[in-house]
Length: 449
Image (tube, rainbow, N blue to C red; front, side, top):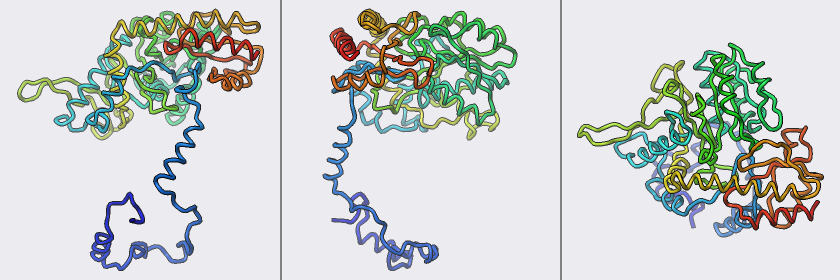
């Protein structure tokens, strides 16, 4: 057996290459490195495993994970378990899509280019916006890019962001802002919603944009019309972070005059996958199209008048002046975008509406069941979509540990990011949860408490 089974070169080929270089052995390639700094003895690492041993070890390690195939999950907080039709994997797994990376050559990439074009069209319909790009890395980076767009478009350096926006999204925004020397101002909240009075007080002609989430981190449905009006009053851009599934039943941000809409596309036919890869959605108005990061796929005709698809408006530093360039997002998550396209195509408008309706109805049922338990109450009274915050009479960490023993993955402990909400937990109820599973959660929770 060859010493490195994953290298294709034979011993004869190695000797031919060394002979061509005038060397007797491979070590001669490193003669330029001074002898005194080279290793004098072998590196002390364990002996290599065989392929069989390695596969078994990874299997044992993977088995330590708690997954949604074996456990019933009520954990959301930005990543959600939804039912994924089998057709999604069947199409995404085809070799012409699965191995495609960057469609730089349109003449041989028409399939993936058309798929992304259809994706962009669906995202515009979903959000009520005019143009969409060919996707970004994930929801948090999409939101940060939207903030950078707002600053570039308004030539202002201050962004307002609601504390009801996902805490991890806000941290990513701060990271982006630090390098750009932008100021991030967080707006407080009351009863789970952005504080309109504080937002109005903070607004001024130095504000580039305002960012809110709809539904927000707590699942509460923000009053977008009022928020958008306050933002437009001072000439700032209004940025909405949405749940794409919720758009099946809620009025899209475009209807309220949003300038930029972003989202995490994982709920659209993409599995949880222990955290990624995910899909960043970004859609905007025609007025801001040249400020968009990443790629945009356009439709045109070829020399023979046939319908064709191409990369268009590539506002990267390789193509235009650097000071006018947008973020160079090379990996456009095309495979994840394709999964979202297949999912939306298969579900259709009625199907997506029904998924959203099931999420909402099951959440309402769960609220009734859980608040009937002594000591359990809602943290906020605001209307919610498929996530709700509850206050418990015990530590959520201890409760989750007990629930896990019964095959249930509990909710997100809010005190990690919001210390004022001690003993509070965020639970998610999607269409994938059954009435029986919600009843079991209520029974187990009551027993634990």
